[in-house]
Figure (cartoon, rainbow, N blue to C red):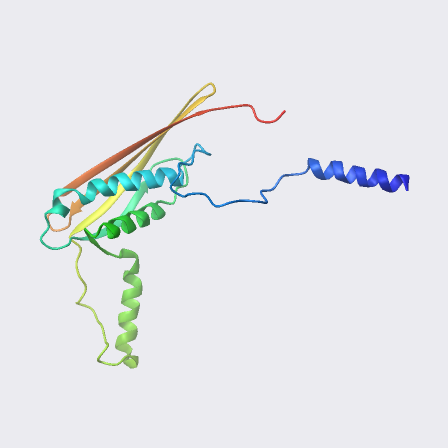
Length: 196
């Protein structure tokens, strides 16, 4: 019996020394600022997209267009040392601009799927009344792309992370840059000792 009690006490002590896991969570407001990490975060993404989209839809080329401009969103080049899902940023840009009802988009990523569907519809499997084919697509008026840069500085216990996001809107007919917008984020962190 004494050995059994000692064995159970040893197991209890050993299990409390093992790795910890996150076992209980709760939902938070996705719009609240998240400064849990010194890396690019969803708060950074929301802040940048909100500001740049507001600036862009207020630009003269979109505001004064007789017809709603058609934009092709291409890519956001990641020039940071971090792995950042830039496609997610550009997807959020599309959603925000569509919500503004100031522009429409051409889905560049869907082009291969569209071409495959044209081939299928022209195979004889689709009724002539619903047949679609090449030559009817709408061309883009503007191309939106951009770049994400960062600088990290650390002195002693202080660390500063700086991000700069630049968007460029180019007229597809003329090649003229119609608008360029930029947002900057600087975050400061203090290193603290963790543990015993």
